[in-house]
Length: 231
Image 1 (cartoon, rainbow, N blue to C red):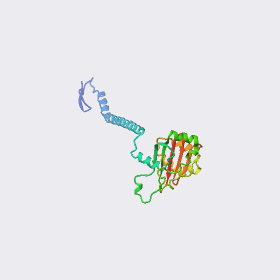
Image 2: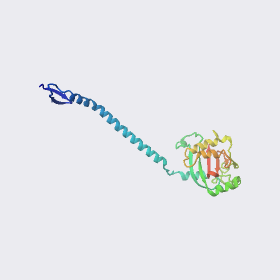
Image 3: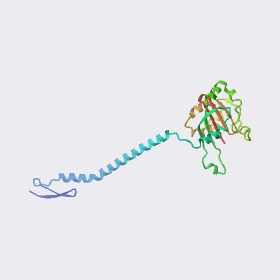
Image 4: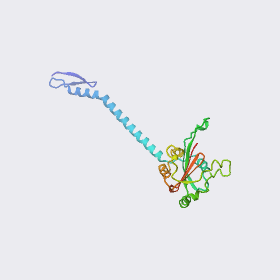
């Protein structure tokens, strides 16, 4: 009987079997020892993948929740009051449902200002919408001056042209003045259908007028008044 010593996996082992040293255990131990780094790398990569997946799922969930929430605009009341001054008092409104502008906080600090664009959308009262559907342009005959400027020095500036029925002129669409102002407004418009407005101004059934640097559209079917400006 022959004794032989074999070092396997850092431990002294002694095997005897019919005069031969058994190599199977040593080979298996060596294989396991060599695979340890590979298993560690795979385990680490698996855990990193799981963590990244969970983090992505949580981030997506938070984004969806925040996106669906409606946050109160602390300046909404002041903005509504500002835009209402430019709308004739003969047009009865209930609330401002959207407003938007391309102006930034730094614009007042710039000596030479660029032309700003934007506007607001208001909900028509049911009575105003009914009167417009029944009387049409006759209901808007005297609605020519912004309610906040009647009798003041700025009245001529905020007096509009006589109302007309849509479709609006082709110069309003595309790269026109109205389309530019409405484009700035719709960036912040989450509570009305901008595509429906685009469609309505191209068809009969709505009304529009033009001011010095502003345009106004009333769409009774949508219970909507849209005021835009560029300048």
